Length: 378
Ligand code: ADP
Image (cartoon, rainbow, N blue to C red; front, side, top):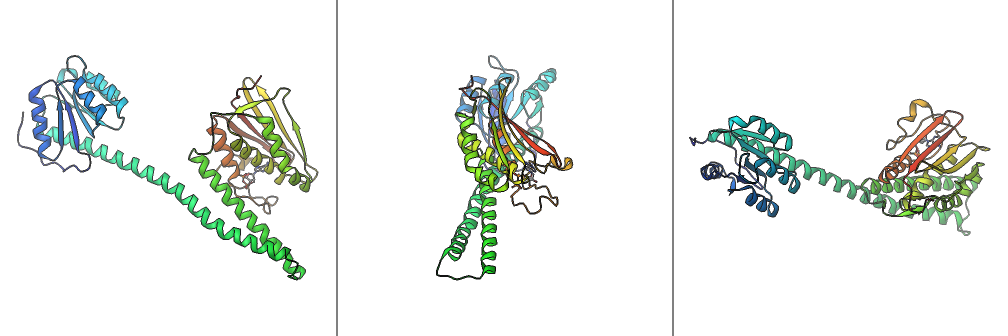
């Protein structure tokens, strides 16, 4: 079986191959053939021994015979998948057991090599498996790096942007309020507009930071249960002046029994303040906004319903996309980042809930959030 060796690529990185076979000759052959092209080959005569070793030190590749006494190849594959799902597994099988080889592939083996095989065939298949492992490692590394960079980027940029913005805000506040500085009315107007723009930009950066934290799973706590009514009352209290200023009547309609939900106060506050402030922002003077809670089967339902501008049907399916804002004459002057609803959806889904919207242009909009009940639901 052993013949002249096919020229193979040289492995790099973790180039260990584990071979498990009860046939001593096969182990020696694999060691010799693969060792010659740069692999470090570790051989084991039984599934048990091989598995013990893999549990301690998984490798890039496993070459395993399907037919072995005691723990057979299929069982080895199953257990290796539990230990290290990334390990590439190649099975060796006799001609008579092709159907078992198919079974092995279904169980998670990457390829199979029917006996008898030439050294060239072994090298080819092992090199192919190794390349697959290398690419899988590379893409996992790139994915991790990308996530890390995203996190660092958002934090860095937002810090770099916020620091000068805070300074600009302070200068403007001083200009506006220092009694020793006399400003013409026109200058006051410009300063006031600048203050407004600075606040708008600060809001966008804050939304962006919250979203980044929510997307990376560092925001929500699913292990706690929170009184929803209390959270709503807190948010409504802080947004009350905004509603008053906009001429929007804010009403609360709570379920007869207090409802608590799975989720931390901070995340729930973010969802509520985004939905309620939208219900005020995209409303009209004289309009109304109702925040309602109820229990449906065992799901807690929160509705934020306004009689505002409504959303054109064509825009509704993109509402939860990052930075998406509806552009109509009515909304053109309303400030925002287009991140609030993305943040709401990310948080709600993180809490294993659902958010949906029903809206009619010119009539109003209702956002419905369905959340898991917390421990105190009666
Ligand atoms: P923004 O910061 O722009 O308000 P959001 O993600 O919260 O960002 O909302 C996305 C867009 O959805 C808004 O720009 C607005 O056009 C629309 N929208 C959200 N809530 C309402 C609402 N209650 N009534 C009408 N339009 C809304």
